[in-house]
Length: 231
Image (tube, rainbow, N blue to C red; front, side, top):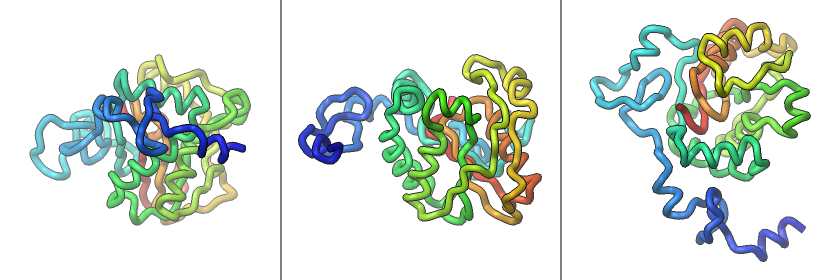
């Protein structure tokens, strides 16, 4: 039935529902409003830099507090335009957006992720997942796995308790909120593996830092982070 409906209905913009030439695309106006992160960016966290001094330049935040992950890369700057699309993906069941995000990310950062061994999504507590019905990071991770033909293992990291939303918390509050909530599943071995960690938005980096630290402690060789957007 879905295939028949898709065949009958004309393709529309993923953001505003205006007519487009093909499925899974943005209209010219919405595409133009998206702020893609391009060079120069921080070698470590991937945030946009104003000037390029050297290829391996880190931003002040990463220089002061070296992240637990090796590199993080994001597709978009989180602003009023990307926020609407990402929130539709995260909270409004627009999971089809994951296909487009995954394709764009895999093309944009193909060099950064070509040697990874395993894909792991940032976990969601099982009760929260039942409430929301899906984990956006896992949906995105599955699409990225299809694109780069790498294995995905969603239960290596476990969110053992329900934590309140991180959205309006400070960095210190986020760290306190996540205390003892993330665990490594010891039935798995990731010794010497190169891990690709997937999340939807990189804000303060608290969550991916804690996940990366757990993975490194468990023996991971390296951890690379990919997100749709960063603030």
